[in-house]
Length: 182
Image 1: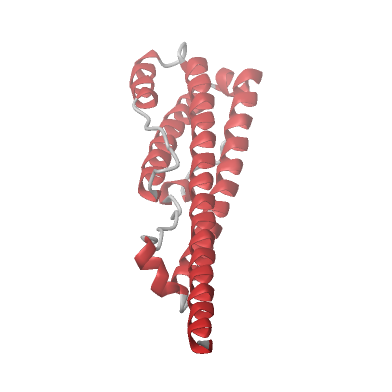
Image 2: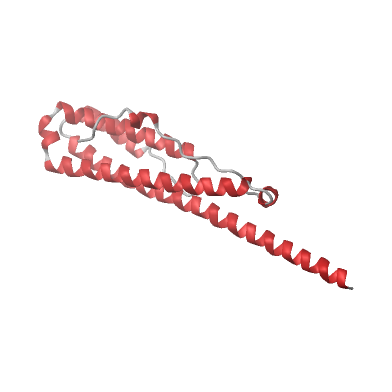
């Protein structure tokens, strides 16, 4: 009779452990989803700031305006279910659009000296810094989940519960080569 109680206690402990591990994985997974959503919000704000910059350049380079407007309209929204590749692709579009806008500004010193242009460019820089921080938070959460998934004995439960390692956000190479935005 006592061995039945002991087996029941062991099974109970295992069930509670599995529930605890599952809850931990869910929390870590949701933290990653939330971080991706935050990145999406910040990228959207950067697109809005770029659209404002584009409006400022409209009178200076009408031929570029149409191309850049199409690029901005073609942007993809980043959601909590987006992949790091989706973020990288959108950031590549942002870098390309910003490069074109900066090229126009370089050609027109009056535009580059305009206070509205300067303030809007500062906003773009601020959003860039916020996105950088959001990327760090995302990667930190991915590290925590990946580490938890790889550790024994939780690794046995992770696969059964459908949790898999997540990909990191990698640096966008074009950003490293971007000229100063000031």
